[in-house]
Length: 392
Ligand SMILES: [Zn+2]
Image 1: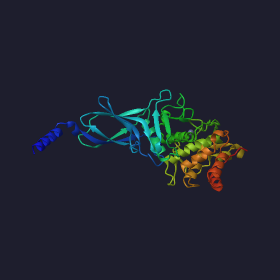
Image 2 (image 1 turned 135 degrees about the vertical axis):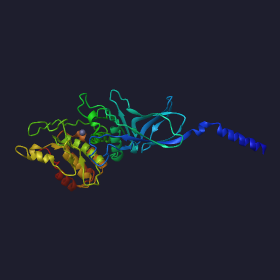
Image 3 (image 1 turned 180 degrees about the horizontal axis):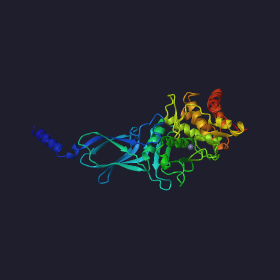
Image 4 (image 1 turned 180 degrees about the vertical axis):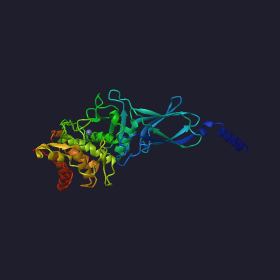
């Protein structure tokens, strides 16, 4: 009895003499992206600049106020992590611009090719945890210079919803335009990376479009081909057909350029539009396009040629027609090909081997011979969207 009493006294004194045990609690941290898109109203997803969206596996680092790293790792697929922390300490939390997405894909957002430093953001400093377990919500905020949260949100959503069969792949984006003059965003196949210029980092359709190019090269390594979009057609007044770059949704281009840009546009349409609805948005500046409708832009150009005729469009194409064609092949207007199946067709067709004026017949052969699209389905859809313009 005497031994038991002293044991109880020992236990009691042990419990009350170590306040450190009483000071730890388990907290849930949820990290979100704050996006600000100029084309926010277009499409069916990420339609409200006031909303925050899950970060999907972003990388976080927790430091004590003294600078000791207490946790570093990727958050869950919904952007959360549970940690046990000491409520007598203060903490600083850094989010790094890299994420571990679904299908084991990764994205990294870096400053530039010359300075390949990851972007990052302190989402809170001097956080004194509550004296009870609770949930904290923090956001990777929009920054009007680099707009990293826009790129992270756009690429994460794109790859998670439409991976096009990519798995265990890495995707790097630089907040650097494709050339020093700041002219364009691109997928730069020489360095296998995305490059976004400043005023296109706030366009979700551009973010997904360039990823659409990246995916083609990623799924078919070595497909780094020169995309010849140098046709530079002019309108009736002799002005260039595109306002800001060498090719655009409506411009007449070499057939290979139209097919290649049409694929990237299609990827973007498939990411941001719900294919089960009967509409499709493309946010063309000042003149949004309803891409569920076949516009047959190339056919119009053939017919308005002087004199009109097939010679005028032989070996040429319009990327908007191709984008709408693939949308039709995907969204049940012509067929129900998945985004991955469209990419398989494209890769089978081996675009690296095309001449500038080629693409149509290679894609048709791949779709009908290798991928089981009935010839009649292809032909009807090609007629509907007006994409067949072979060399004469
Ligand atoms: Zn493009």
